Image (cartoon, rainbow, N blue to C red; front, side, top):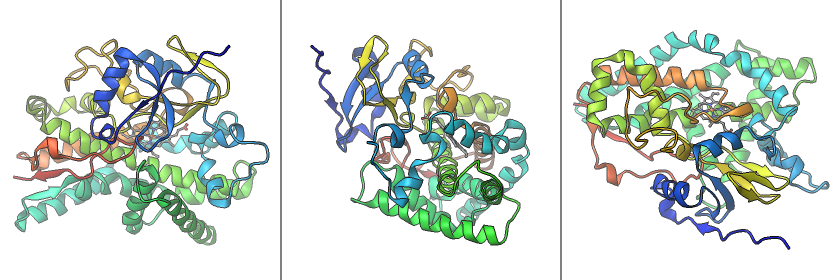
Amino acid sequence: MESAAPPAEHLGADYFQHPLAYFSRMREERPVTPVTLPHGDRVWLVTRYADVRAALADPRLHKDWAGKLTGPDWVPDEVTGYLAVHMLNSDPPDHTRLRKLVTKAFTARRVAGLRPRVEAITGSLLDAIEARAAAGEDTVDLIGAFAFPLPVTVICELLGVPARDQAQFRQWSNAIVASEGEPGSFRAAGEAMYYYFTELIAAKRARPADDMVSALIEARDSGDSLDERELMAMLWLLLIAGHETTTNLIASGTLALLTNPAELDRLRSDPSLLPGAVEELLRYANPLNHATDRFTLEPVEIGGVTIPAREWVLCVTSSANRDPDRFGDPDRLDVRRDAGGHVAFGHGIHYCLGAPLARLEGEVAFGALLARFPALSLAADPATLRWRPSSLIHGLETLPVRLR
Ligand code: HEM
């Protein structure tokens, strides 16, 4: 007789506000456990560092649900079809083929060449904030003014997507990563992006430019390495992955520094600590609660617990990064800590493609922000700040800061 699966704990709506409190209890009591998320989906959570690393590298945890969890007669509609076929939803060999098409553009060396442009965008955003301060505005929302426009402008330029459309992307990508929202908003955003990219691809096909959209169209049209849906999926993945997370590294990282003044002072007085501090901020203020969805097709044992077949598994990277068995005094921010080995960028074949770019943006953003506004402080009680209702993204809704 099969043993019954353990009962799933229901995570209430306050889960989004205090996810780490839930995870620290789970790490202790039930490190591999089924739960129901606030919006009702049943998933398994893996919360310990060693288990998360092992699970992220385990080929028995699949990503390609469209080919494997659906029946043989299932045919996606056009929009679902394109939303589903990007590298982060694929297993080898498709994953290998899709990732290879863009790997070169994101290597540490290629990304280092973007530094002057990232610094220039950062500088002009900070100029605009300073002008607002000079005009008498003492408080700004650091997300709207800086943490969002910096990475979205960088990724738009890299792809060749008009940066003037970024307000639109913010709305779409909020709807796509939200776990709670207006019914149908995910689908509506998916459809809107689909039409947007259809037009963009047609325009670039007619007039190619020196950008990644044109290069991918060329790859698509000159061989059989990617089809039209995969081209579209690649673009929306890069656009969303390229800014959602980095926005939250900058915003939540700034919050962490402003609420740990001794660490902030240390970093201000020794900017050579910046690269290490970015790693520590990734560990401490992890922009994602967990890695993206994985599925079992057969029973899989993780950390001594057997997860049955056809279950949905989330590797909780933010919890792994606070596991006391891996990081001493894990709940303390320490910009001099060796945070190497953190799993904020994942692990295994889906390890973040954009990690060098995110690190560069983080380093430039924190360095310039702290240098430009020596008296920067929080303009709200940290306990009143709200986190977005997303299972995947751990990001603030707004971050009001005082400039002087
Ligand atoms: C602080 C910023 C960032 C964080 C914390 C982050 C985190 C992650 C994580 C955890 C994964 C693996 C997900 C999984 O295995 O389920 C991932 C994958 C990915 N990230 Fe990032 N990311 C960041 C920035 C970026 C940027 C700037 C880009 C630029 C395009 C990017 C593009 C991607 C892509 C394409 C993948 C899929 C890789 C694959 O499936 O092989 N990310 N990211």
